[in-house]
Amino acid sequence: MDQTILCLANSIKNRNHCVAGRSILMDSNRIRIGKWVRPVGRGAEGALLDHEARYDNHNNLHPGEVASFSSKRNIPLLFQPENRLIEPGSHWKKYNLPEIEPLLRNSLEKPESLWDHIPGARQDRLPESSVGNGLKQSLYFIQAQSLEIEHTASFNGYPQIRAHFHYNGKKYNLVITDPDVKQQYTSIEKGIHTIKSSTNYGLCISLGMPFYGYHYKLVASIIPLSNHTHNN
Image 1 (cartoon, helix red, strand yellow):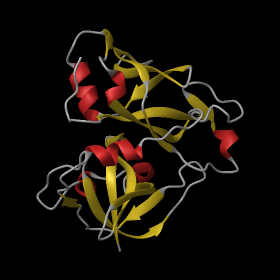
Image 2 (cartoon, helix red, strand yellow):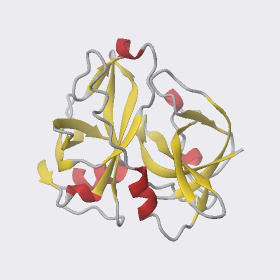
Image 3 (tube, rainbow, N blue to C red):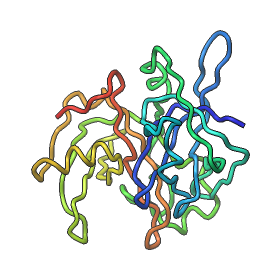
Image 4 (cartoon, rainbow, N blue to C red):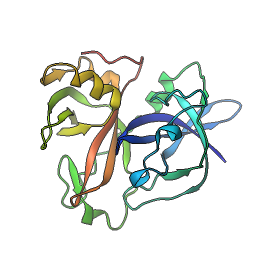
């Protein structure tokens, strides 16, 4: 059956795609925001291959778009309960809705923290052993304060783009996997760049697959809530 979502991330995962969004419930009178959905495919660790993250016209799916995909079953993981398997050979169908901003703002959440209540949690990661009983969700869409984007280098010397921000009184420093943001900030000089009016952006925060004993918190997208351009 078709599953319709408001796309809130199409990020980089194993050189392929990790898509996530909130389900869209349509009736004759209104459009409602539902639960989180993370479509997974047949790439490594469930990543969507290029053709699994495109429309029929071969354009890529982008955050802030409403689209549907074919799926028959959920395949939840303890640390990613939102996973839903995309049907082989299916393409995304785009819905051209007149007003996306209200949907984005209605998708914003206000969790007390970003999984910091989990035993052993740090500001940027959770111990793999701490999620043995399962998580209620592995995705959040939030408004952050004091957002800065840093162009730096990873432990192996490759360029890395990170987000520094405050949320509910706590400071976070997380890797960004949003391909558009990575491309934009990799092309400019290294350093920390302040984002003006940072509360005008929504951040999709995602828990990644296990990596050396930890699930890392990732900024899967940075989405303008009123337009679709990133500004320094």
